[in-house]
Length: 408
Image (tube, rainbow, N blue to C red; front, side, top):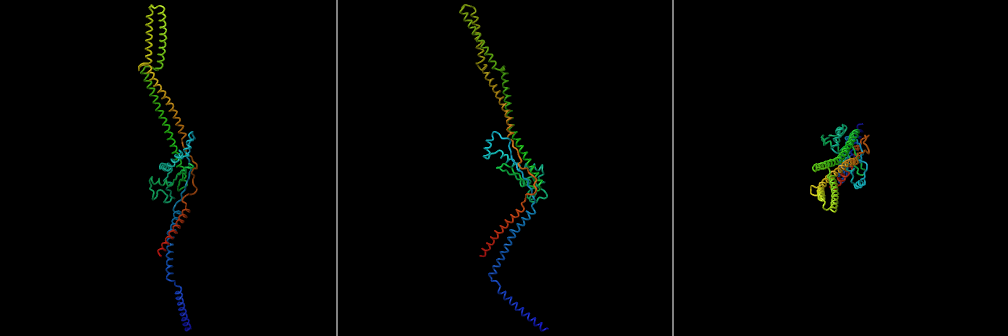
């Protein structure tokens, strides 16, 4: 038994020795050449380079996008409203207005831009803060640290709140359709609807203030003209009264008529006296009545000369006084007519101001959204993944090309 065991052990050793020799021979046969070994080393290095670039340029950015857009960023709701600026009833000047509108010059366009600028202004933000607690709406607990107010890059003061306001609210004007598009973002559906409604009400109040200011300016200008005309009428009447008191006559024209009638009567009397004188001289040339009649005729003619001197003559004559009187009367009449025209202009200004009023109409009122609008999670993640993969392929191609040029 022992001898057979020893023989079997020896046989096994011989078989093991033969097997090891065969392995050494196979290793020698299959061993690569030095060139093949260098190529294998280059392939291993290229594989490690591709792996590092793939991880850093594709895997890590995609995972970061997945974490940010999928888990970190909070839902943001959006309410949208569409508004239009409408004027009052058309007027006669609409033909000119239509020409100006076709050339791009439109009052409604200017008003729409004014409303847009107001809705994006600090005044509108302050009104929302006072009435609708804007800070609380932007600082909801469910908001993320990037969009919540305040955050690490927006201070707590009014300037930081205004930057957040401009980021969460957009107002655009479509000049083709004349529609103002308002979009309000927030972290709760009720907040965005409430803020949109509040901002529209503030814009309506702003439009009303524009109308009141325009009407007040137009009417005040006309009223100032009325006041000026009233002062002119009062001044003209005062000058006329002072003239009457100074000259001690109410109407020089009426006085001139009296003088003219007196001159006419005296002329008639002088003619009759002259005829009587000629008759007496022919009948009895030596009559003692001739001297008396001649004295009487001379007195009448002298009176006629004096009365005519009162009508026309030096600066104290009635004609010069009539000229000044008529000038004062004409000034008073002109002032009175101007006053009547100014009063009519006030009514016209009121009517024109009412006609030029503008109104903010709601084409589409804001409503409470049922689901969040932002962020576009799937789209953004896929976009980052696609851009990262493109970047990875480009950088890997440049790296491989640079390595191969370096080997040559």
